[in-house]
Image (cartoon, rainbow, N blue to C red; front, side, top):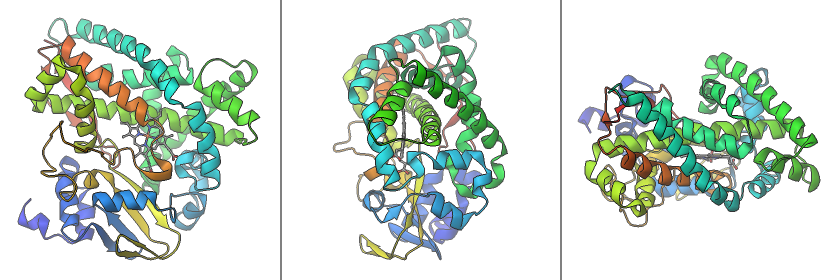
Length: 411
Ligand code: HEM
């Protein structure tokens, strides 16, 4: 890290994350914040957690709440005029107890480990089909765009299968989810919400119709399971909550997993020995995926609000403070991980913060892990000479940065 970056005040380092340098490598700026402590005051009313323990503690602290309708009202009274914010605020991600606990109970029941395990053979089949397609597209030496042709298509097919949406409908999801997830980047981006609102309206009317259909004719899918348990177990979801949570499942279900696959492949290119190991010993996939999650977290940050004055691991957090929980920074905390900036797939006791922690711990973590553990070794085995075929480009996002394009030659 240059002396100049290291001497930055926390506020400057945080602001630098949106600069071209910050976009290229946010980790040096996370480290610049870390120079001032693991839970740092940025300005009045704003703190940032960059330590592993501090991030983990903040996420498990029940008095640190997620942004919900009440906190949106304080920050941005006009938020309800944006359908993207309104609908996501009906979901678990932006709800606190008792609403969060009520919805989460029903969703966890419909989202069981059995359902994930049952999907494994289908994931292998879907990945195989996509690899065939990549082989066709690249057979004459034409570069294949990995993000569009595989990293996006596999998770969308899997979540589509789980939700029970028709194949044809999955085609337009990518653009819609690309637009709608801007609303998950934080309320500070309200000026960029027009496209997100349009996409949300489209997705919400799609899911509203699907909910009505499944209510009339239940099938063996997640939408039917949610509708049935929401209608019958006395913990009713409102119609808006069902729709908000289904859009969240779709968006969270592939926008993130897509980037886990992109980062997993990029790291394979940068670490050919590890890639070779993964090709021949699929049992190494679990450690490889955990380290990819740690080293290149698909979701860099989330936030919480202090409901009252409190102490978080010895640091005073005043009531009303917004705490940025920089998961990607916590994953590179030298107090938790020796040589945190090295990619070491066989790290002992690797428990990255990438799926969050506490009450909002990612509902889809087992599914995302299974997809990556199956797909990455299959990809590397199928194309032993897989190589980059041009420069990768990156999204202009702070929370879920990831690749925009990752052209490859299938060899
Ligand atoms: C690599 C892939 C994924 C990553 C890195 C990821 C990351 C996260 C993180 C960090 C959170 C917690 C946010 C917070 O505490 O504020 C979260 C929550 C959530 N994730 Fe994921 N996720 C991934 C895949 C998935 C998948 C595949 C699904 C669904 C099929 C999913 C559904 C959800 C839901 C519903 C929540 C909200 C849980 C709640 O608020 O109670 N995620 N995810």
